[in-house]
Length: 283
Image (spheres, rainbow, N blue to C red):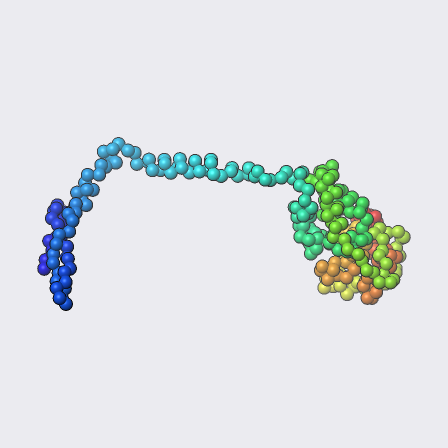
């Protein structure tokens, strides 16, 4: 059976197969499809862009206008403060202040940073609170520790300095020093003996900190030119337990250093410092 073909200019119809059952067999009868218009003839009736007088840039103009509207109504300009942002001078949360100003040198939780360990029981029990505040306010002359008080060119207000001191002090825990391991004083109370200090250094420190040692030499003149006596003293007392260096309780051949022992060690190391260095005893 043949179906008539639909030519581009034809309006003829196609026959539609219809099914009818007769007994057990199926007969196919041909009916008629609905009349279909020639699509080509419809396309011929669509007016061209030239006939309507419309410019070819109209879609592009519409796109640019839509993009501009979106930018002006849906997005804030780059750098515009959010409604919930707090001015730096108004921040009163210790964790935020510490993260923004201290964590880069002292570690995210006061440990494992390149600078002094802060979250340490021995350190927080040996350093007086006023000394801690003074360091935050005025920094450490001759070291990488800058002044943070606004009065010294830093970013912290007096209130924020107090918040920093209180937050760091909140990490303090009791130090259970065994008998004979009393906590040395933060600052030197008596002049040290460099001769005895050398003896102590060879016995308890040389293996890790002598020339060419595995950890790093602390007798190197370049290192000593950058380290104050107070920095040396604090390092000997506090150690760096977060990095594996024991504190004063184990540096005397496995026993504790006395306050005078610490002063003697500092005196020995200071004697190796270059003469032109300006690092003072109490800085």
